[in-house]
Amino acid sequence: MSASTPAERTELTRLLVRVARKDQSAFAELYKRTSSKLFGVCVRMLRDRSDAEEVLQETWTTVWRRAASFDADKASAITWLVTLARNKAIDRLRQHREQQLDDPLRLEEVADGGATPAAGAETSQEYQRLQRCLETLEPQQRNAVREAFFTGATYNELATRCTVPLGTMKSWIRRSLLQLRTCLDQ
Amino acid sequence: MNTPAALDREDPRYAEYVLGVLDAAARAAVEQEMADNPQAAAAVSLWQQRLTPLSEEIDASTPPAYVWARIRADLQLAEPARNAQPRASLWDNLPLWRWLGIGASLVAAASIAFMLTVPRAVMTPPAISAGYMASTIQQDDGSTGWTATMDLQHARMIVVPASPALFAPGRSPELWLIPAGGKPVSLGMIASDRPTSIALRAGLLSQLSATAVLAVSVEPDGGSPTGQPTGAVMAKGAITST
Image (cartoon, rainbow over all chains, first blue to last red; front, top):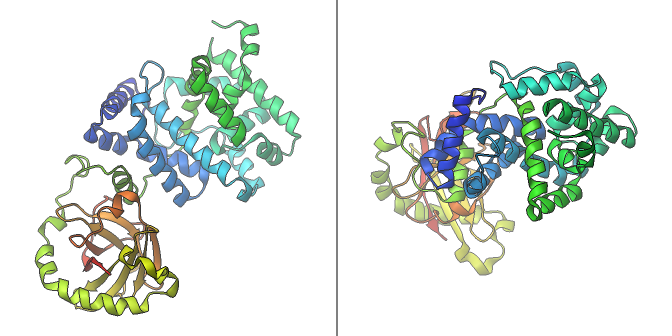
């Protein structure tokens, strides 16, 4: 299920290329191998299983329809799939934005939990490098970046959760992103 | 590869978009830019490669099997590949079609009785009565487990319990649509103590016909783990136009 080894990634990419040619057995196989990862992403962001089910469904109908836009030279299949799921989940969060209540416990959860790879999963070299670069950030800023990534929160929501002014949050995140980019592109 | 000056020149919104901190309007603006400008799209793509590995920390979670059934129905995909849902289905051996031949006339009579019990809101507007279908889902002992009415115009189905059998703890009824000659498609879990309203997706609407059947199987509480019925079939009903 994890896509951490180059061989697994190559296999997923091969399947996605076949899906682009409307190969139904490849579509079923790709779903079998990656849907639980994508569902995990949706559940984590939406915190509601029935919302997550709907977003997962939208994600996969989009995979079938837009697989032809996947460019294997630009991204791995798993990155493309997770990105699609995250984007659909974020769109859903923005639709429900007024209903979202901030729960201060959640930031602590993320902050205390720190970085732990999914249970039993091997991590890719890309993850390990990103993790090393995240370690170079100030703890508060690292937590804000992680919270943003895992919950899809807006700047405003992040500022509220971390009880800092909006301008402070923006500058934390922007500075962190620049630092990460410098570190990762070395 | 990048000078510090080049770093600072890049629009921060591309990274912010990928991280997920922009509001709906700002997201839409970036997406438009990606569509118009290949450089913007390339910058976003680079950020996706940088940040997406963080998702490796997220635990996988197996989605309910009916999600896959809905995806296939939505896309109107034909039979799934054999190796995708490997299962020597109990359903292949059921004398379901023989039962249908016997049951059809009973169902027609029962559906008239059923229509009298349909909530008034469902009955309106009366002008399009042709847009409804119904099914009496009968249990093996001949008693009615549930009745289902399908509002084709609004793409909804309401499943009302009549006298369904009791379920063991941890077991629940799951409703299936079985198109003629096709494999069961999950319509979701239904309640035994109150009406259940189900949205009918486009792919399903086209499969509702007098040759299709509704069936209820006994499944674990969260639904069949395989996307096909795994437990006993405890009730079935043909679909009739009203």
